[in-house]
Amino acid sequence: MIHRSTVHEVLIAVFQVRTFTAGQSPELGVLLWQRALEPELGSWSLPGGVLESDEDLPSSARRQLAEKVDVRKVAHLEQLSVFSDPDRVPGDRRIASTFLGLVPISTDPKLPVDTEWHPVARLPDMSFDHRTVIRHARTRLVAKLSYTNIAFALAPVEFAMSTLREIYAAALDYQVDATNLQRVLGRRKVLEATGKTSPSGKAGGRPPALYRFADASLRVTDEFAALRPPS
Image 1 (cartoon, one colour):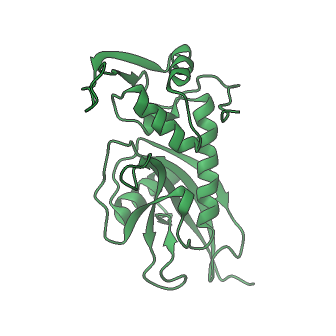
Image 2 (cartoon, one colour):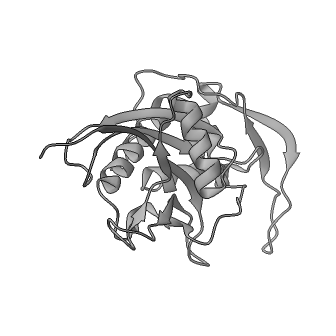
């Protein structure tokens, strides 16, 4: 196929741990918008758009999120892969620089009517190669949960260990023991005790202690660590 020109676009896989079904455990969700025009009318796309001549890639990613899906703040944003297959989209060639974005579980941005959170485990009909972009972003997130403090970008400012366990379980897609998680993160000096407790639930019992992340920016905590599902 001969292309008349090449366009550089930015795509962002924005993840958030959310409860999609009442009474069920939280899941990792991704932000998508539904295409109203051809090509691929009705399919779901990652937010993004064309890189302007006067902006760098991170600035473009943040602008696209604000303009396209009205998300104006992400707790973490990092560049992923470049997708450059000449035939990845119809028409003029498009090279896509992709990003991972993370939003804390405690925030609920107001979205346009054509935009929704979808469970990563149950994606709808996706546009072009966007399903592959999401898979790459999920893989990056899972890897960084092992050897960095990246969960700070998915968690609220203060949390009980049960909440953090749910966040890790949703992102990793397997169950996590809260006691082991606290021990590992404590040894790496990732968490700090706030000295406060959360109100007891309906069943009563001892109020759970609240924690916070020691840093609100990404840092490597154990470069050789690897979290694994229980055997």
